[in-house]
Amino acid sequence: MKAWGIIAEYNPFHNGHAYQIEKIKETNDAEVIVAIMSGNFLQRGEPAILDKWTRAEMALNAGIDLVIELPVLWSTQPADYFAEGAVRLLEALKIDTISFGVEAGESVDFLEAAKFLIQNEKQIMEAIENHSEMNMPYAQKMEEAILSLNPSFPLDLSSPNVQLALSYQKVILDRKLEEKIDIFPIERVGAGYQEEKINYHPSIASATAIRKAVFREEDISSYLVESTQLLFNQEHEKKVSWENYFPYLKYQLIIKTKSELREIYQMTEGLENRLKKYITEADSFEEFMNKIKTKRYTRTRLQRLLVYVLLNIKKADIKEAFYTRSVIRILGFNQKGQNYLNSKKDELEFPLVSNINQETKKLLDFEIKSGEIYRLGHSKIRKQDFSRKPVIFD
Image (tube, rainbow, N blue to C red; front, side):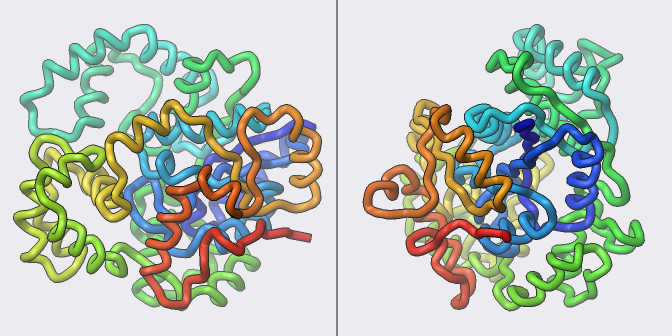
């Protein structure tokens, strides 16, 4: 079976995601579509608006055949490491093509750009060092360094979607998978990834805009496929944001010593002092973010760091994850997805887990812990791991 992979968060699943699936199916080359989906904590450093099981069900209702969880130690990473974890899983699942949505760029552009980055890594790092005194985010330093070496660089690196897609292509080249895995960019329609206006397009809005509209209690029905809307209405009461977890974050930052905070992943350059300084002055997550963010540290960079604090993810944990086999955790499937898994199960290099028990829990300790912490956000959120079985879509 020809298998296509999508790396997604579905936070929540919306018409733009449905459009991507439609375009993949139009190729007549996709016999099964597999989604590698982040669990309850996401790449931009925030909790998912609804839990992973609900979002997996949304995806299955809309045409995905198999949903696999991206482990939290990968799902909360910057673009390159996020891509590394996701592509590892797609490689293990014997995926033929990875599809992604971008504002612009053809397959050849991503291949050319990734080759340039790999071949000129040393020069790029040196150029970044030349920008080290400039008070700007690392991603912007990277973009300026690349353009200084290659003014005709084929991609616009100001787009987070393009950055992620380029990271996927880099991982494919780094892992020498270019003969096994193709890429298939799909031009996004309507709102961009970070567009916050819900009325930008009559039927497609960014997930960011949809979430903001949800918390403003605005109507989002025209931006969701019908099955998603029904499920969203059922689960709406359980929606969460960073504000739901702020008391627990505050507790962590108050009780941990500066020495303990320095062990947290990505806690660099004395950031523990800044967090300690302002945490007792803030009464909400938004107020805290406004106090700690600077031109040097973007909101996303800081949000990721705060997820690591909340989940107590340490530098040693991430280092170990890089040298540990991943796990293929099934969140849901339909008959086609089940048939695909059955056809590949003897070839899988990673353990296949469909439920958590005494034998499998040691493979998913961080997922179990992060799931319990996620439940703190709302009293009605169900258990996330023990007693949960994959969503089956008939």
